[in-house]
Image 1: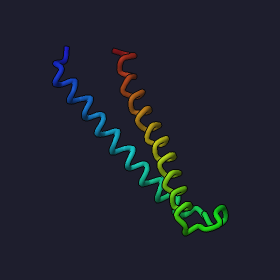
Image 2: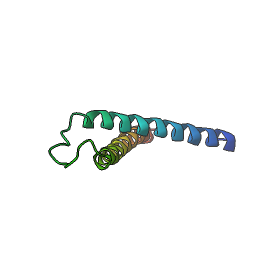
Image 3: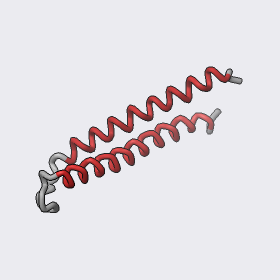
Length: 84
């Protein structure tokens, strides 16, 4: 059985990894959205509202991508219990 301090440490490390993955995915989605033509959809593509829309889309897409990556890693780590 793990001691509480080891358990807290491992939970903290997983939280840190999750934060890094989420931020990386948000940055990647922001970068990917830079090629999208917002001038077709927005009246003022250089305005504050268009930039806010781009930020919110980046957060939504990045979070979902990070959630998928972290779930996939968690599921792959759980496979060891199948044969264990």
